[in-house]
Length: 527
Image (cartoon, rainbow, N blue to C red; front, side, top):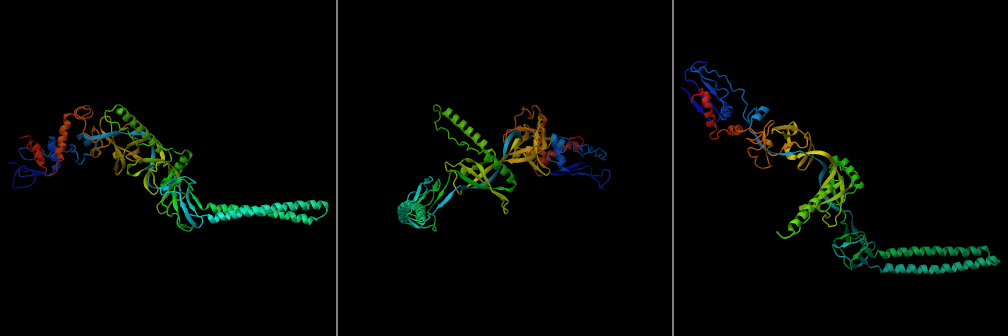
C-alpha cells in the first residue's frame, strides 16, 4: 500500500507501513526532501536522481542514477560552462567595440570673470559738471565719461605760461648784455669779470625758462584731471554721481568699466592633473585655438510643401552637422576649453591661458584660467558655467559603452559574443572614462560586446541578439531559436522547464507539476 504526499517544497514517499522503522524490512520508510532538484527533474521530464527502483520486496535499491545530472538554471552549479551551455538562450543587445582617437577631458565648474574691471575715481577734489555716458553703455578707450570743474587748474596753467614769456624776455636782455661785454672786453674798456657776470646771467635765465616749461606741464596735467575718459573698451556699470556732485580721490568710485570681450573663465583642477595642464598650456600658447563656428543653425522656416523647402532643410541640416563637427574638432585640440552655457544656451570654445604657480593646500587644487571670445556677450562676469578641458589625447583607443563594463570582485570585465552566439567573460582594464563611453584594453575593435541584458548572461551561455531595448530576433534568424546556430525546438522546452523551476515556493501549480512528472519514475513506470 503506497501513500504519496506532495507540497510546494517537499515530496514524501512511504513504501510500506509497518510497526518497525529501520533496515531493509518491509516496514522500512524512505523520505525524500529535495524540492529544488525534484522540481527541476519534474519539469524536464527526467527521473528523479535519488528515486531508485523499488521492487516488490520493498528493498529499495536507491541507485541515484540522476546524481550527475546538470543543475537547472539559477541553481547551484549553473554558473559553470556546462550549466550555462544547457541553459536557454538569453536575449541581449550587443554593440561593437570601435577604435577612435579621443581627447581626455576633465570637467569642472568655473566662474566667468572679466579680464579688466576698472573702478573710475577722480584724481583731484572737485565738482562734477557733466556726465557723458549712460548706465550700461559700451564705451571705447579714450571716450569721455565725466567732466569736473577745472577752472582753478586752467588759471594756474595760464599763470605758468605768462611766467615763461617773462623769463624768455629776460633771457633775451641778458644775451644782449653779454654781447656788449664781450665787445668792450676786446677793446679793453671792461675787465674779464664783467664778461663772466653777463654770461652767468644768461645761463640763469635759461634755467628759469626750463623751470617755467616744467610748471606749464604740471599745470596741464592738473587741467587734464578735470576730464575723465574710459581707460579701456568695456561696458559702463552703475553711475553713482550726477552733475553737481562733489567728488574726491578718497571717495567712492564714480563708475566701473568692465571688459567683456574677450573674457575669462576661472576654475580649479585637481593636483593630479597639473602636469597635463602645463603641457596643454604650452600647446595652447604655441598654437592658439580658433573659435569654432556656432553649432546651432536655424533651418529656413519654409512652409511644408513649399518649393525648395526640403532642399533648404537638408542644406541647413548639413550646415549644422558640419558646424558641430568643426566644434568637436576644436574642442579636442590640446589646451582647448569647452564652456557649456546654462539652460541649454549652447557652448563656447576657448583656450587655456593661465595656470597658477601654487597648489592650494586646503583643497589640493590649482587655479586655472581660460580665455574666450565673447562678441555676443553670452558669457557674463560672475556667472557659473561647466567647463571641459582637453588635457591629453589617446590615439587609437578602443571604446566600449560604460554600461557594458561589469564590476566584480576580481576587477572589471565585459561579455564578448563570438560568431557562434556564445558569451564569454573578458577581463578588461579601463584606461579612461569618457562620459557614456570608456577606453579599455583587452578588447579588439569590431568584437561584439553585450550591453542590455548582461545581468542574465553567464560565461558560456548562448545569447539571442536583439536591438537595444527591443524584441529579440524572429525565429529562423541567425542565432535565434530554430534558425542557424540556434537550438531548435528543444530550446522552447528548455525555456518552459526553466520557467517552471524558477517558480517560487507556493506558486500555484509548481509542486503539482513536479509531482506529476516524478510519479511514473517513483512507481517504476506504473501510472
